[in-house]
Length: 261
Length: 275
Image (cartoon, rainbow over all chains, first blue to last red; front, side):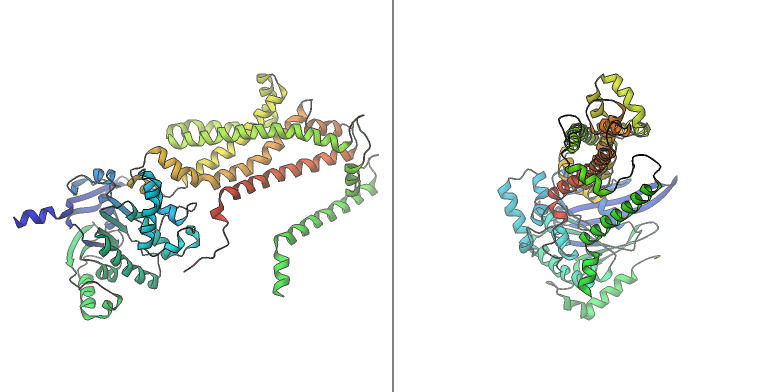
């Protein structure tokens, strides 16, 4: 009985995922034998150095890539079905905003594609902007915003379609340390409020420890899952947490779990 | 000191210096040519003479002053260049769309595009004239052909410049092809499209004038070739040259103005970047 409950709880099931692609006529293994169960409402990080296949894995979940072996189920269906049901919100490393649209209209873009009624579009966009703290900038153009604010718009846009899963590909790596810390806290607040499942790709150990429930440590050549580490630090978390011994110990533990880097 | 620097580097000041420099060079050259006196009528007149001729009310062909005549012919040339330009722009844009939609279309069309571009207009003009059998039509078509290439290639480059992430976003929203084009690709290519227009607008006018010189009828080029053959004064000749250059520049500026009006997000300096 408890086993069944646990299974129902799984949002994304990755089983023996392998990814081999061709480069210069040779087979390159990007991922091999990756199995992870990601639970509903979980904040999970895919952590690793470049070349470990963490982004590849995220793109497989997002249906942007197809694994060459293994099985993946998202809420019981294929990634493609999940994508067509608009269950994914994606945030990239850069905000990828549309220059010619105001902040509000950027957030409304996915809703336009989904044929949501205009009234509802505006309402939802404004709600999302409130969530990320950008209400005052609804009518600004992206180029008038700082990098951190642009990334907030990106997050608001991803959330606007009410996805169950938020896929984030190194979203804060281009930001300065101060902005990043602020956005970490904001992201945790948004996550708590919206109950999304978040898959967060990063190469920053501290970031992954601070944010996640669980960290999947990926090692390169070939990309593989070398450890899964539970982060049992109390929530809600604030920046002060980073000064505690528990935090630094976990960071050390994660660092030691890498193989062959 | 700072203020002086700002004035010196301002756009208006630089432009004024430019114009002044050109006038000085012109006048020096005119004086030199005048002193050599190799031709009975000085081919390089002083600027004042040209300006005088614009405002003189001496009738040159019975009913019109020189400047009225230039304006009349310019109107004919401009309207042909304009119609050709519009047709070429439309065709160029549609072709860019087709080439972007289908790789095969791109592979097939591109060599022809290059080829058309490499044939000199002067070689093309008689052929097209023979095909259409109408001088005015052939001039429109030539203006269109010249417009077509820069618009098509630049627009295509615009489509291709869209970041991979934007395509992926659209993919994740499960957007259809039409939505992808309307929401992402077409707005993205507007700056590129206008780069094409800025290149081709003056070209359409120049080509139109050039083709005029081959055939008779009304048009700035016809007038130009007549004045070159000595049917009119050198002042008329220079009036045409200056006026042609002027409308060429104006056509370029017009494209810039339209672009600015269509892309307000690009020149919004009211609010500075905030952190």
